[in-house]
Every structure is written in structure tokens, then in C-alpha cells.
Length: 224
Image 1 (cartoon, rainbow, N blue to C red):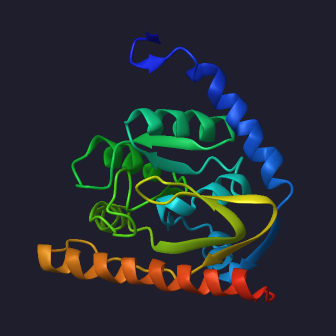
Image 2: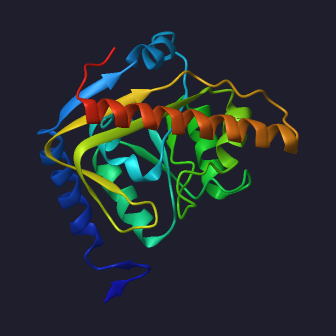
């Protein structure tokens, strides 16, 4: 049974899930890598776009809660649940995808940018292919002038779900690594070839950072 577009249980499931995230996250041993890359920008009062893989967003929902960061979320049913969960944890949302610049979700994010909000998105969402950046993040960075900061998470141990992206949920008391990459400043007024070049650059940045976070989580070394 549903009410309108969404199941009857949605209003109760989202707060319950948000509470579970808080309980689970409180047990994690979080290690942050190169936080100064992020703090250097925020300390100057600048804004940025955090970009990370869909499968690895859960630790960031916990560590970045309560900061009114605007997150781009899909309009699918699972996206609706995620949107309600992150709203309960102190985020803002834009609803749509990163497939094309004219998408409603990108327009929402442009409005958040005008309000000087920090932005965040999963450039391989909402339905994949997994770990492949779509051009919307390039368009958004070019239009706003905000640099893209690659972000990666890794956890040992973690559950890996059978979803399209192999979504990861760190176990209770897991070691969770959160790594920030070098800011990527995308120029304005790009042609199609330039959009593709910057898309590939952002994708490579997230991939390399994710591999580094995985090594750190596996080896158990300290962060810098």
C-alpha cells in the first residue's frame, strides 16, 4: 500500500535509518587523510563540490552531518529514502541526476551554489555505471566556479551489498578511512571535448584516491 508516490512506511523508515547511522557511526574508528586539502578552501570562506562514489557515501553521511551541505539525490524511490535520511541528519538536497546539465537536479544545485552552500554529489549515480563519472559534475563546477574535491572512503571490515554499485556498509567498530584529494578547478565555457577531458580527470582523481584509501584501511597505517 502506498500514499501517493511513496510507500506508507517511508515517513517512519527514514528517521529510524538516520538513528541507525548515528549509532553505527559512533562505533567507527575514523581516520582522515589530507584534511588540509579541504580545510584550506573552507578556511578562506570558499565553497567546493565534494565528489565521491555512490557505493561509499555512508561514512560521509555520518562524518559530515549537520553542516547543511547540499547533496544531489536521485528521484527514484531509493533516492527518496536516502533524501529523507540525509535531511534528518542535517543536509540539504537537490533532486535529479548528474547525467546532463539541464537536469532539474543540477538546477537545484545551482540554486544552492548561489546561496553559498557546500555541494556534494555521487557522479556515478543514480544508477551507474558504477565508478564512472557523468558529465553533470563538470557542468556544475564550470557554472559555479567551485573546485571539485575528490573524496574517498574505505572500511575494514564492511558489508558489500549486491546492488548495482556494490554499496558498502562498515561494520560496527570498523576502521573507516576518509581521504580528500587535490581540488580540481574546472574552467568556465567548455566545449564538448573539454568537458570530456575534465570528466576523465575527475574520474581518475576519485579512482586514485579510492585506491589509496583502500590501502590505508587494509594496512592500518596512520593518516597525514
